[in-house]
Length: 84
Image (cartoon, rainbow, N blue to C red; front, side):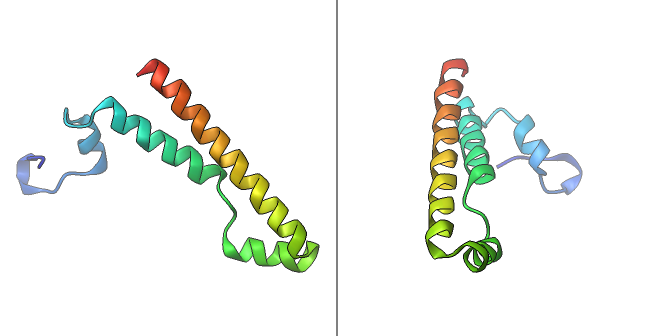
């Protein structure tokens, strides 16, 4: 556990400044962030896509978006493992 002066609890920035976060954990954080950025749109957006384009096209768009998210996350993992 992090010990911070003045009795306050550690912030996220304090956690990253500490020595307990290994490079592999940074890589996991980056992979998760990239995946979430490119992940399937939220439910209201899918409802609008279904209403405007139909169920088939909505599922196609969701599938393509998932493939892009997985590809970007795998690319991040590959490049990150080279540099860390």
